[in-house]
Length: 80
Image (cartoon, rainbow, N blue to C red):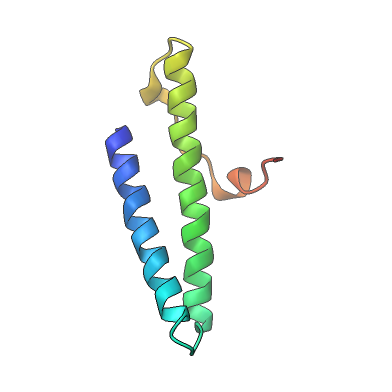
C-alpha cells in the first residue's frame, strides 16, 4: 500500500514538473493549468498525510492499513 501511495506521489510530481516546465517557456500557464497545479498540490498533501498516518500507526503497533485518506478541506487546514 505504501508503494501505491509513493507511485501516486511520483506520478503527481512528474505532472507538476511538466507544468512548471511549460510555465518556464515564456508564455506562462493558462487558467486550467494553474487550477491543475493547485489540485496536484492538494492531492500531494493528501498522499503525504496518508503516508504519515500509516507510519504513525505502524510506530504505535497498530495496523497501518486502517489509515484513511482525509478530505482535502481537512488536510489543507492543518496548522503548521
